[in-house]
Length: 285
Image (tube, rainbow, N blue to C red; front, side, top):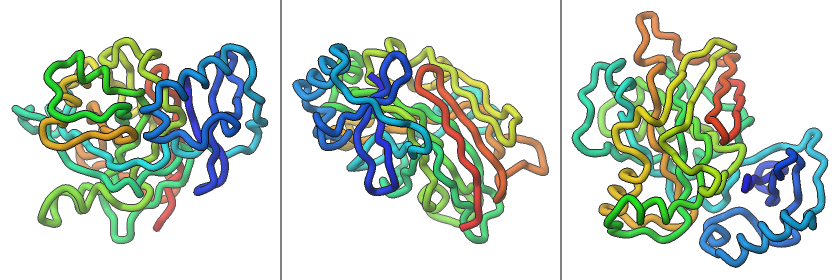
C-alpha cells in the first residue's frame, strides 16, 4: 500500500494512493498514519480490505497539499557514510560500524514544502536517502530476518545538511543536521510488502534540473537489515520511528571547488524507484 497524509500543515488527514493512481480518503477508517496504526495489523487489514473492495471515497487531488506520510514520529535515527561511493568521494574511510546520529522529529516536512537555507549558511547540501519506517517495537534483534520483520515500510527522505555547521563549528554533527525543514519526507509510506528487496532501489537527485546523485542501495556499506539490527542493540526502536539510511555519491561536499552548495532560489528534486518523487524550492530562513 501507498499511505500518505494530505491537507494543510498540522491538519493533514490519512489517505491511500490506489493502484490506478486515485487518491482515497482513509479518515473514515483510521484517525492518522502513525506508529499505533503501523503496529495494528487488524487496522492495516481493514484498510487493505476496503481498498480491494473499492469502498474508499476518492479525494480531489487538485491543489491538495501532500504532507509527511507519517505523524507522531518519535525519533529520526540517521546513518552516516553508508555508501561506498559516498565515502570515496569525500575521502573518508568506510566505517567499521554504522555511524549513528539523530535528527529531531520537528525537522520533518512534506515532500513539496519549502526548505529554508539557515541564516549565515554558506554550505547547505543535498542528500537523497532511503527512509525505513519501523512497525514493531525492536530491541536487541538477533538476525537480519528478524530486523526486516520489524520494518513497516519505506519512504524517500531528503537529509538536508549544512556542512560548515556540521564539520567546522565544533562538537557533533547535530548543528548541521537539525535546522528547520531539513528532513522532507514522502510523498508516500510504501508498505514493506511492496519493496521485496530494499537493496535493489535506485536513488536520484537533481538540482535546478541537473542530475547530481544517481545511485543504488546496492552500494550501501551496511544494508537495511543490518542497520535495523545494529541500531536495536543501542536503543529501542518503536513503531513510527524513522531511520535515514545514508546517501550515495554526488553531494556538493564531494565535488571540486567551488563546491555548488545550495542557495535560495534553487530547486531540488529527488526520487527513489517505487517510492515516489519530491520537489523543494529553497528560500532564506
